[in-house]
Image (cartoon, helix red, strand yellow):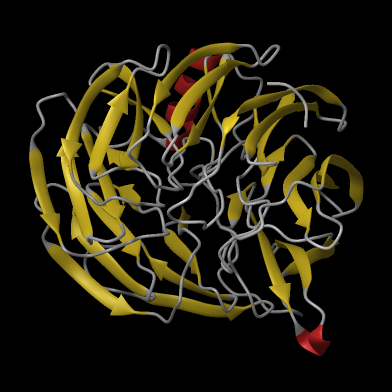
Length: 419
């Protein structure tokens, strides 16, 4: 082991994000967890397919070596994933050609060092890669530590550090949070008994700041949002929703809510943030993110593993059991709910006015993002296992699924396009 607003329009928000962070990205890229604006909402003006099958609207498909739950990210003409081979005990980053699905390269970062125990629904390659347009950043749990590495777009390892321990004793469920890019830093969260959130220089991996998160057993990815005229790094867990200054790690505010353990990433609309969880309590909560501590509303619903979507004043969610909800974002009024079919572990994505939600059986439900009523557009099947959240950009859907037909489990990456 090596050493240590209502939301702005998607295009406008992405431009602001790039200007603030100096990332060399394009609006047709999907550079990190939850997409360009970190909201699960695809760029405006897209009309991705709403219907598909193994023989319909598949532009290409390719086999993914190993196993992982990370979402595809797309930068330029490449697609990047993390993957792990349990038998060989390897953890790798793989790259595919965006137009053809051809495997371009595979860089192995670890061999050996896997945790002895991990939840059956987790993998040794769950965090999604983050990219600033020039460099890939990836985190793996290995040898009881978190390994943070930077790679070139050609797969060359640039640097690698030991970010700190990851040895949870209470809940040995594995690791999930994706790395977060802000300014010149890459931020990682390690939420357990000896937990922390830490920021490292994107240039060389040197540590910039570190804060303890020792009373936490959680799996949520931190997120940065521009709210109340300041950048806020938001995360839930340890029975609180918390906001930090991403430049220093300084606590800005925290409000009691959600639960001890959470998995979903916080979402926001204007100056309201929304969180849901978890274990052992169940709660969905809306908080004014101006430091006042004002709780606008809460209910007893539980989106434990999934992140939600906040759009045009409404909050959309799909819980573990496959029940979809729409709430008024300001009042919490339930606009509708509908049982789709679960279980569900991945997060929904909004594109072209539709929400795409995939369950663990590989079924994707497409329904309108409308508070008026639940309107199912289509129901589609690929493979028989779906844990990774889909990616939607450039009018196409990129979906990582698995199939166990014949007894051998095989992962497949699909590019769906109706053009």
